[in-house]
Structures are given as C-alpha cells and as structure tokens.
Amino acid sequence: MTQDPAEILKEALRLPPEARAALAGSLLDSLDETVDEGAEAAWEAEISARLKALDSGQSATVPWAEVRRRIAER
Image 1 (cartoon, rainbow, N blue to C red):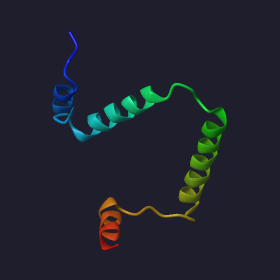
Image 2 (cartoon, one colour):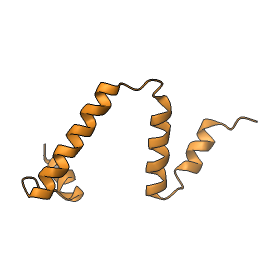
Image 3 (spheres, helix red, strand yellow):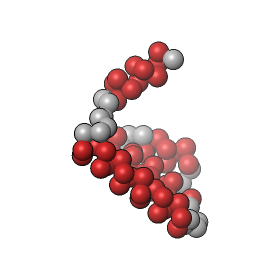
Image 4 (cartoon, rainbow, N blue to C red):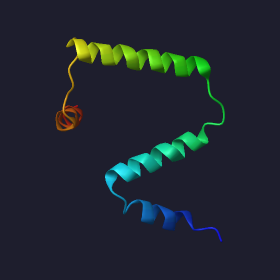
C-alpha cells in the first residue's frame, strides 16, 4: 500500500525541528543519482577553510535572529 504524499507530509510536519531537518536532508540526498567528485572536493576544501577562519578568529558567527532581521530590512 502506497501512502498519499500529503499524508506523509502532514506526519513529517509533526516531527521536532531536528528530525524534520534530518528527513529533509535524507530526501535531498536521495535525489542525487551521481556524485561529482570535483564538487565534493571543492566543498570539503571550502568547509575546511571556513572552519579555520572561525577557529582563528578571522570570521565570526551571526545569530540566526540577527540574520533574519537583516534580511527583513532589505
């Protein structure tokens, strides 16, 4: 028996935010049929560079509430 996608969505929206995020990530991952090794390597390098910038103090985080406020002001 196949469930109606609308019913699945209704159930998923009742999950806690962390579980919804994990589910969304899994669903997006399931759409990737091929892996672009070059893109994966580039993302890993970018992530590493950003982490180093955070750890060294060259970059700082911004709270989500502040980001939302800035976006709303545009």
